[in-house]
Length: 109
Image (cartoon, rainbow, N blue to C red):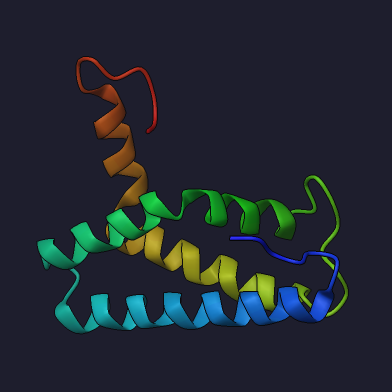
């Protein structure tokens, strides 16, 4: 997906859309219950498939590799909080560590 990062309004719209999607995933996971394995697996799959986007949001929020454009700081803060909620809810860090320690694995995928 090509994103016009030079245009703060376009970037803000992207963050708003991404935040809406993540909020839906959080709501769905919570409504199914924190112990629902199918919900946890789907959440982990989403996080795995969208790892680059997630890391990009964390880096942009921490001002690593550039400063967030004006007017996007609050959106980034909300995204970071939402990603952290998903990661915590799904036990994503523990899941990835277990996956990395399986024989034949050399690191995160």
